[in-house]
Image 1: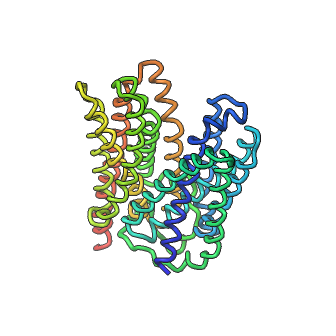
Image 2: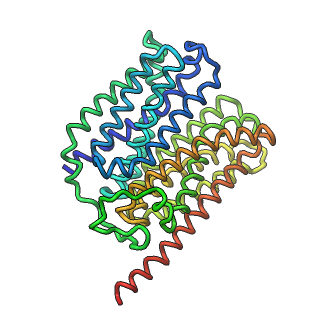
Length: 407
């Protein structure tokens, strides 16, 4: 039963990644067919992002009322319906309409699944599951490429992925009885702020109360910084290599994709050591490795090798940070508060991913793309400082609680 549900969750994480690359890979053709400017992709992705933020913030109330399994199944079903709607849309305004359930479904399933895995499975699975998300995100451009190379067109690609999501929805609905039968992984948890109280374990944690829990604002800032760093690197790293380092476009594009492959492969490798070294060291080591990568990118040397290698190193460093922050949430803040806090973390992640790339675009238009390593370094420093402050807060809290218990 444990293994069967875990297999279903792995498939669900692949499914989570599948739609994420479709808009980007298909938009060069889509905007021409729809008769809209290339820049309109920003409108579409903004609608999706707002939906994910809203549903992430609502995930605690929904999951406590209906359970993680049902929320996941319904959310995947909403995403499936939106993708089928995309495949049938012949105008941009219809895409914007279908983008609403697209974003709402994506945010709710992301928060519900991440919290369920954090509560019920070991750290290695959190890393491997997020690696499988990368597999899904890597597959969808190939689906789009195949569809564009045939008579299916971009609408056919959305139809294929929508069909996969429909099949997963059916599997999730059939598996609902399994979701309440997996024994959670027990961990030492703080009792201050995020306390677990059996009498209130099913009580919704309001946003204002969750934000007042000591340390929550620290981890939200760290998560915002990490996701801002990742999304900025994905969008702008290749441009920086071409415009400021003189790397040819083909090589820059290849190493830009290696940054993503570094994240996916790094999460797979991190899974083998995650249970032994723990989430705290994974986060600390991840940020430190990204910092090394950023330094290599910025070094003013006559060869491009160090900058290209630095991009790969930065990708490997990014790999364990997201899964480790999520997995450590029940330990840092308590099981009863974890769903609410993970929902807020998802909202912070989407906010960082949405706002940072255009912010860098504005700054680079004013100062030049040479500031890319500096921009990345500021985000790395912010994420590392905030996560280390949380570590010190938790370290002070646990001994004090142990002393109180002894008395």
